[in-house]
Image 1 (cartoon, helix red, strand yellow):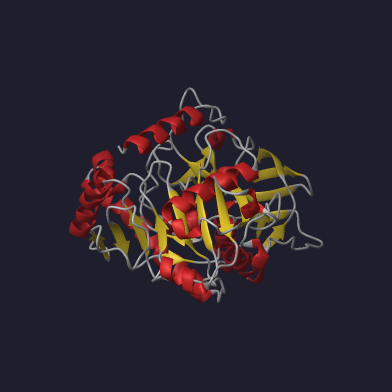
Image 2: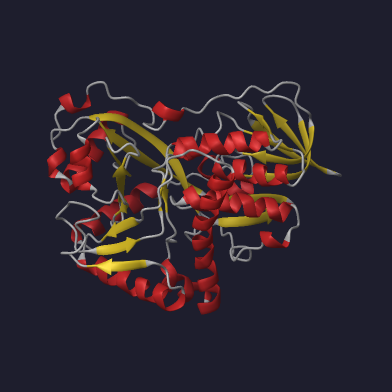
Amino acid sequence: MASDDHFEGLKGIPFWWEAAAPENIPFSNPGTRYDVAVIGGGYTGLSAALTLAKAGHSVVILESEKPGFGASSRNGGMIGNLLKPGLNGLIGMYGQEKGIAVYKEALASVAFIKQRISEEDIECDLTMNGRFYPAVQRSHLASMTQDFEARQKHLNVPEEMVGPADYAEDVDSAIYKGGLRQHHTGGLHPAKYASGLANAAIRAGATLMVPVRAEKISRTSDGFTLKTSGPEIKSRQLLIATNGYSGALFPFVQRRVIAIGSTMIATEELSENLVTSLFPTKRMITDTRKMLSYYRPSPDGKRILLGGRPTVFQASPLQQAKALKRRLTSIFPQLKTSAVSHVWSGKVAYGFNALPTIGQHDGIYFAMGYCGSGVAMSGYLGHKAALQILDHPDGETAFDDLPFEDRIYYNGTPWFLPPAMIGYKIRDYFGY
């Protein structure tokens, strides 16, 4: 049990906000008619608005809080390209040609985020030094190896499998059975990236209205009218980019997207030598548990950040911090006496097929459902959605014709999550 002394002065805000807290950007004399209205000021909406503004369209972003206030400034800052079903799973679901095409979208999203950050000169501590996926059980390693072999056969992705004696350069922990090492992914400072995207969109000519909440969507003969907490907005086209914060505004999405909480902690400042010893190559880490843990060194190399779903039922920030500290100590016993400085939570979004989604319904475009891996994919699909609005052929994606499924038992309240999480904990405990 962690001592309460390890949580004195615990801050209930994201560690990332110490360097880049989301800020209200004042707007004056905004118009009320735009080519495109974007609802949601996170990575997806900001990236879409940037692409649209650069193409000469008038675009307004409506954000109910501050730019990047939701998951975009709360996530682990990990840039990855593994889709939840895996390549073998995708091939089983959709056939070889389609499965490979879907997986290529994930690879393209990593190339896209690197290009966008470079083109817009966004300072966000980007490092592409890879990621390691440690296997908690031998069965996990076997399953990972099968999917790795499929990727090597069909995609030639720069990664390798390593055994239990060969992952010391990735993480100094004795609890794993080996894992998957990637060389082409990496990490960034998520709040700095969100701020940089917002500033880039504004420079390109987009209007950002914050804090302005979209309250009702109405169809008109020439587009849409949005009732908001501020001015009434009219637009020819509309993009919903709210992901895990969608709510009841657009019932079609509400019935298809499951919002799931995730919590992170940051340690106090540690010796840089200690952090380097635990992460010699500073790769991002995501393990194979059903109730997975993801962790990394902070960009300055002075702290360790770890995230996951620490409790099945709602719990106080302190209780969640204690649960995650126990998880951190199980990985790194060296940190048993280290204090936790920050704890915070955010929402990720899943669809029922555990894949990102992009498309339109009744003329309303949407992009969301990144399944906790949206740092690269969200901006990429926001860009693609913008191209689809522009009727540009480069907007086509392999996700376009995949079903965006609902369930008769789901109306936007995920009542089934606690039983599912209990099941995951049991599977993790027994190692299957």
